[in-house]
Image (tube, rainbow, N blue to C red; front, side, top):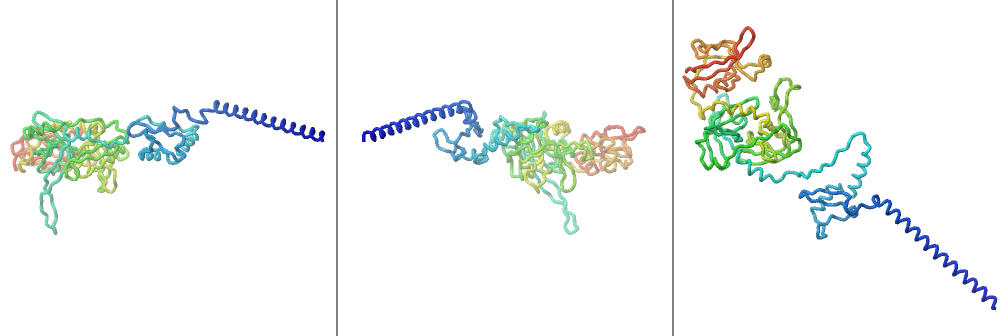
Amino acid sequence: MEENERVYQKTEDVQIKKMGMSVLGGLLFGLVAGLVIIVILVVFKQEVMPDAGEPVAKIETTDGGSLSDISGQNEGKQPADSSGENTADDKDLHEVTSGGENGADETSDINEMNSDSEIDMTDATDSKATVVTDVTEVVDRVMPCVVSIFGTYTMEDDFWGYLYDYEAEGGGSGIIVGENDTELLIATNNHVVEDSEELTVQFIDDSVASASVKGTDKDMDLAVIAINLSDLDPATKKMIRIATLGNSDYLKVGEPAIAIGNALGYGQSVTTGVISAVNRAYTDKEGPLYGTENSKDISSQVKYLIQTDAAINPGNSGGALLNVRGEVIGINSSKIADYATEGMGYAIPISTAEPILKDLMQKKTKPAEKRGDSAYLGISGMAVTGEILEKYNLKEGIYITQVFDKTPAQKAGIRKGDILLEIDGYTVGDMDDLTEVLSYYEEGDTVTVNLLTRTSDGYQAFDTTVKLGGK
């Protein structure tokens, strides 16, 4: 019995020792494992978790602040404001910029895949520029520079074979670009004032004044009209402004653009967009090509039009295309626009237009009302076309086919075969243009005639003074 008790006690002591060894071994294993984990966390800290001061992704907001893409957003959590509550705006911004759940990780993986590519990756911009939505400051400054132009025209119609004339009205826009000692000068498109019998300008204060054509350039679709300063009310003079012209040579595609004009004849309105393209040309449905110069060969033509998605509607012609500084960078033209599409308007760059406008501003102003058709030069002719235009680098002119006896033209030395270019600085391209120009003069008026005359060495420039006769 005693022997059995000793055996039992011995067995119990062995079991206690085994349990002690097991516990000790477990403690040693846990200690070693903990040390290993600590070493891993220290050595690989940057790869396992981001530093608290450097968020994984930083998102610029429209108000100049930022949101951090912290761990946990990919588990359905939302960015929170300072009060700890999620905001709807932050939620939308996160969804758009991250591309959805796990979007940031996917983008990072793609960037890593492309890091060894032969083609360089784009650099993320540090710009905080945003889409322009509030242009009130620019409009407040520039609106006084833009005017509405209204004209009356004589139109011809056919009714069952009978031709009859009727009076019509049209509208456009203009930009105040300067003044001289006696006149306020306004730039616009040629097609706004072409063939007008009477022009009226409306200013920002709704006052109106009669205007006269000072000079036009058909090829560039530009014109300058003038208003006598004495016809303006002093209050109007205080409200209106002369526009600041910018530089369109350095425009960048994508930069903001603002258009102001008399859209549809309803009065001044504003549209916004971006510069969609530069150095563009446009062919309308009837075939004429706008926005090119220097050559009739399309492949070698210099293209110069600005394309914008700011709406350019009928009535906007002659109005201002602006940059965000309020500088005029283009003169809008609804004539060169395709209304079968949306978001494609065109403007003449101000750097292209400015030297032409300066020249037109020096022209002699035509009277506001025509004085009849009594003035007479004494020639017949036809429009110059083809090789002669290209050879002598001419825009247009009249080839004189006949000089009538005892007329002002004959007395001034003008001969058959000469090419008539201008009268008092006004370009003439055909006999209709000549009749139009002469309608502003009366018998006895003296004009300067610019032409090319034939010599043994070819055509040479020839200027002469002519005292106009009466029919």
